[in-house]
Length: 226
Image (cartoon, rainbow, N blue to C red):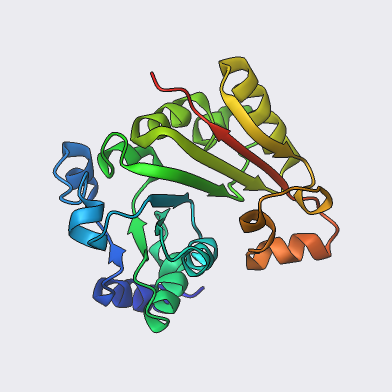
């Protein structure tokens, strides 16, 4: 994407009512006004809140919002030029139950209060295979603790990925931490009993992976309250 196109999208995002772009200072200092108030001040309902972390173009968030009008969805990504597409589609279709938050995922606790979130989706994250990159892996122990703090007790996390490495790493970590794994399969389209929201929604890249014969893996799990 050219820099002109990016700038155009950044400018357009500023006019979108479904895009929230706090400053880093606002989030880090605890002054982000929507923290703890997403239901009352933004969505203006008490429906469950579901996050998609690293939402990319926002395809999954938008599709989930169509499928589950009784839930609120928030796509989270630092790359606003990417989720511009999802935000624009949501506005065009008048989907009032989906929003996009531009922030770094490591700052997520500054954006949501304790127990404010019902579910988290992590869709096709960078597996960060090299050892020195493990701190950026979205299912490492440090990130899991951040998710634990914003999730309601009994809240779910979904991991959908084409990376066998990421799938295996996360399963091993969850077993080691004695967290509850509710469902796991290394080929979700080749398994019976896969949750319909996992197999009925495909991102652009996911459909490409499937055409190439790649397996799509999925884990659904819960984190114990501390």
